[in-house]
Length: 108
Image (cartoon, rainbow, N blue to C red; front, side):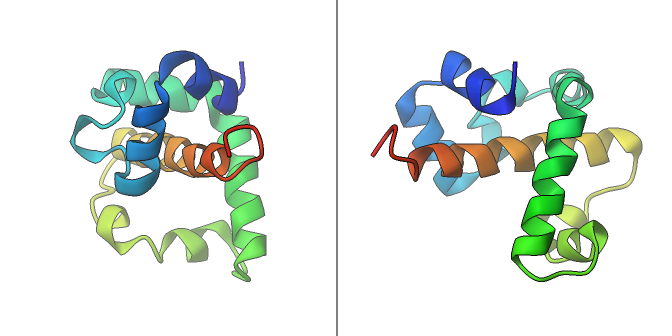
């Protein structure tokens, strides 16, 4: 199951809006609160997450994914382990896809 379908099956529209506006921080996405859950999500979706990262990197004109990620100062400064890295990317991907869902013709 891809990230979009995971979101549509696990989140209510109000939650999708909240995640899109506020991010996953502070439990906005009940299914991705604990590291155990975010690491599993990352591991299950890593290829899609990296494709999203590459697309965004190119879209915003950065040379590398890590240059693009370096602009995420609020979150990137807290990366100090493989677990926190996977957590960040799990949250980022869900936030990104929630935004895409809300701005698609399906929901509009």
